[in-house]
Length: 137
Image (tube, rainbow, N blue to C red):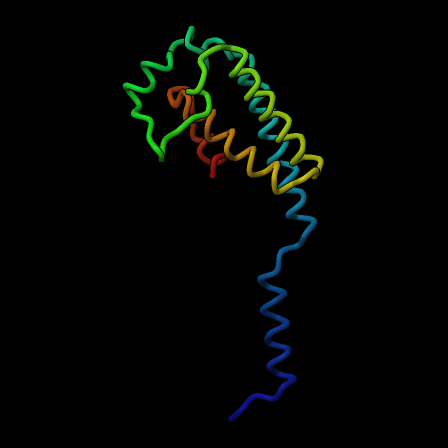
């Protein structure tokens, strides 16, 4: 027996209602994630010299030898080991997080924030926690 058009359209409407995303919830999630990225980068900037420069606990040469950077495990922080470079990348991370929070060029800000967070976390994986994996995902 065939279903009527009304039954099919009612079924499709219910499926769309169940699997749809409320744009307000999505915007709230984006804002929360942007705030988290900005605050995390600001907090890490307090320990800039200790963990993200060559004068800290894990210089770039040791990190490259021990961690084995490759195409799958990379970091922009490896390009330069000075504090101004790490500080600039952290500042850019904070700005991308704030752009996500405010909704300014959201796609670009999200992609840049993701690249910068992965780069930050790969620079010194010895100081990461379980929450850092969730932020990266």
